[in-house]
Image 1 (cartoon, each protein chain N blue to C red):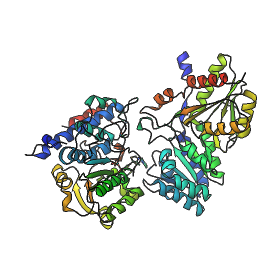
Image 2: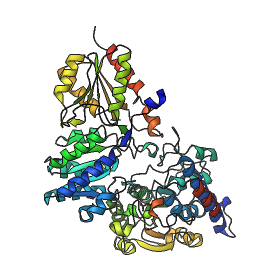
Image 3: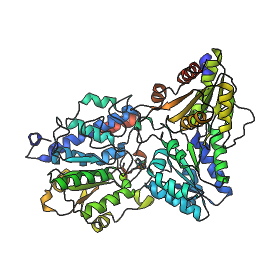
Image 4: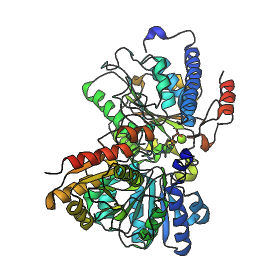
Amino acid sequence: MTTAQRNDSDPTELIRQKALWMRRTALKMVYKKNLGHIGGDFSATDVLSTLYFGVLNYDPDRPEWDARDRFVMSKGHATGVLYSALCAAGYFPQDWLETYMGPRSMLNGHPNRNYLPGVETNTGPLGHGFPVALGIAIAGQITGASYRTYVLTGDGEQQEGSNWEAAMVAGNRKLANLTLIVDRNRLQQGAGTEETNGLDPLDDKYRAFGWEVVEVDGHDHAALLDVLGAPVGARDKPLCVIANTVKGKGVSFMEGLAKWHHGVPNAEEYEQAMKELV
Amino acid sequence: MAEAVLQARETFDCRKAWAATLEDLAAADTRIVAVVNDSVGSSNLGGFRDKFPDRLVNVGIAEQNMVGVGAGLANGGRIPFVSAAACFLTGRALEQIKADVAYAGFNVKLVGQSPGIAYGELGATHHSIEDYAWLRALGPITIVAPSDAWETAEAVKWAAAHDGPVYLRISRMKVPTLEIENRVFTPGKAERVRDGSDVTIIANGTTVHLADNAAADLARAGISARVLNMHTIAPLDEAAVARAAEETGAIVTVEEALVRGGLGGAVAEFTSATRPVPVERVGFPGFMPTGSVDYLFGEFGLSEAGIAEAARRALNRKPG
Ligand SMILES: Cc1ncc(C[n+]2csc(CCOP(=O)(O)OP(=O)(O)O)c2C)c(N)n1
Ligand SMILES: [Mg+2]
């Protein structure tokens, strides 16, 4: 975003407001379409809000601007939060949100860069965004460009081998301009990550691959802003941010339950959820 | 009343038949194992997991590993059913399917769930319309797309007993059970759903009942259409295609898949080389726009009207 949008006295206030709007918007989209991935939308909301309203340098009027910071949404199923973030950031008008997954909508169930400005690459199959982000970062490294590249993966997504292939290259190339954020909500589609194919200790794994690793509360805007907004210059390694999150965060009856991976609230649950999201 | 009659045919999600049959087979044969990628729910394998917890291998979200593990389990004397969303199973693990299953020749059953465009508005990444073309190109894999719940159960039983790689395409779209007397599932042999002499409609999977309804419409207009259920697209029942070409002189293929390289491709390859007749292919032209299953079926002619229209086009192309 342009620096003019920021409120420098308390930068987290804007992030908080936008996060609330994004959660309410994502919920409405999923409820109205009776389809979507609300649990993973909510766990990632504060990360996206911090990035778009506190960290990333972009201009929605020039989505192809060479010098923009890149954000790659590798967990492409969470379009409720991605689309509401892009809309809040000014990439497209709000009425587009009403078409979510409708016939020939630009707001497909998974993001398509040919449909929507602000989408850096098509995702949906897990384990694709990170290698693409790696390529973006390598392009920056070999051209000496100053943009930063951020990629968000799910934690279940980390089970895909392609992530580790990317992690190895990034570590070897000392890609300080690359930040991986793992949405560590400890749930995947059908169950917990640790009972399915455990990831812990995830921090040690990334350290062993040559990364600097920071763990952060993925819902604490000030902490996220500190970690994600830190200047690249202070590092000589890629940065892995393990964002400890809660799947379904913000709605009491959704928090921490696998069934809300792609569960859709009924009318009563929707009203209850909206009451909580204030 | 008319409406009630029209809606009377009960429809079934074939995944139930798949899961129930696999559980029965596994109870009788301890060699049977299931391999999944965080897909217990989408594969309907919750019951299997509860009954045979030691025989469910969940590798997490890792399809390449999943198929490799399947090949290894076959090496170890197991009969693995590797079950995942068809798009990720075939797309992500294509080289494992080629090298570890087809080329190495392991007795692995690949089970593609919710294939075609069953995932509707989740988009082209989640559609599996290229799978026929990819897997058919490999050769040694028998590819079966059951048309209804009964055929799904028969195909699963056959696959378990068959020694060799198989790809089963299991739909979650609700389809009616075909009304054919004394049905026997014979892999590699087309099933005649309806006889006819002017044109042959060759369909498989979720489109067979649509083809049969289209043929009924055509019959009312005086056009006699044969309908074949080509549940096995590889190896193709060339004899049935040859008879269709010779006896009806025009062919329509219908599949919930890409028009390139699948059933239509197989039929066109065979007829053009041996008995050239007009072939009209009904299917999807490429990456689909956003839309529900019903919307995309309608827009791209996978409907009674669309199939009947393709039959008329094929008839119009008949020489003389
Ligand atoms: C290659 C691939 N395999 C399987 C899936 C199906 N799938 C979609 S989301 C999901 C679970 C993802 O879990 P996680 O990465 O932890 O995401 P989150 O908890 O943030 O929603 C799965 C298995 C997929 N999209 N891509
Ligand atoms: Mg998760």
